[in-house]
Length: 549
Image (cartoon, rainbow, N blue to C red):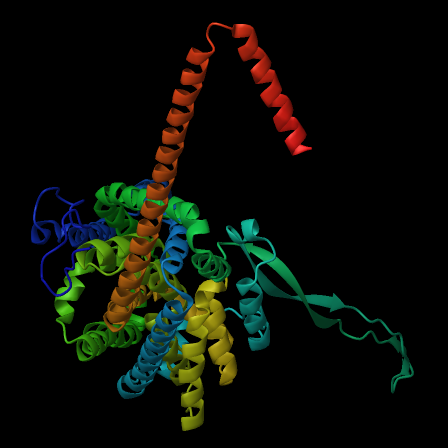
């Protein structure tokens, strides 16, 4: 495999080629960015026009919805084929080291992102109690237990039905049930009247497990990681299955190329339709502007400074050249706001543009898209402290540390929980005793911030794959050499066996020729008395039978 890391040039047929075929990378590079800009400009211009009918908004956003559906359609076959083929090509020791390095990177960058968010929100201080007066009270949410969310995470990791996990995941649901207890009490008032006093109805919270629509990505990843490791241990017996999943992965990648031709137009329609559909955009931007600025500044610092710096320190390679290689994945994440939906594009950019070993990308990226949520951790830390500032609550150092740790841990399991942003934010606010109903006040700007934090999540996954590949390259080369040596020995054994079979076959043919010549001589000598020859044959057969007995 040719390597293109740090070379500044794209691999032939890379993920830039779908934009303008047979052109260099730098000409095809702006297509996705142009789609984002055109979508934003068109959306703002259409907002100036008279109120647009909802059907027209639906028509404008429809091509973007089709793009999202096509990308999500490829998630399941891509996760299955990539995890199995990636882990089947590694031994248990190598896969363990890859996983350890990836997890250390993921947790480190997520903690850094959460701490950065806390520092920025404390320095900028976007929260103001007057905002609460302008925005009003938020809608109250049902109580969410941290223990229930943790158990849901574990339950989803071990799905009871693999087919069901492809489209549903389990969640603990709380419901308030009214319990009316009527008790008549005869009470005599000062006037001597008898009144019937009825107690007010009471409520109890009942919990139940329900299946919610949405792919259980965490459960699928857990199962197919184990499946791939077991297949790798089977060696030659599983080669046919490995080839099948390799071919499946190649087919999915070809489908990705076809979808990417359509992506700039789809991304433009997605953003345009979303901007048009937002009500009172100017009012929301004015009221929550500083909150948005705080989150976006944090995401820019983390994605453009911290992550490239970590990559440079470890690999000693140009991080901005690396970013150019994943530019299309970043643009796709910005438009779709889905790490999992961007996964097919991220695979292609890393493998084709940057030459990252497929055994690394196929293991690191699916796991990273599920548990590595740097942007989410930063956003949730900022949002929690912003709500505290808006309510005039001063958090002590212990509570601030709690926010940082909870944001880190909550972001790890966010992808496996339905309505992930809402549930994880509730966990953080509950941990420090803040009012959970104020989350609904931030929903108005979440559509925009979600795109920025998702793009940072994808960039973090990509840099992680590059770092893990750099640290594991020597081991992978050694493993390739060992496998090549094993293949050579196997080929030599097969060749020697084939040579021995040919030799034995040749000797058998020689013996048959000698016997044939002897039989011919005997037949010639007895040709004048055929009856004697026949009696001789019968006599020999009887002799052989007697000898056998």
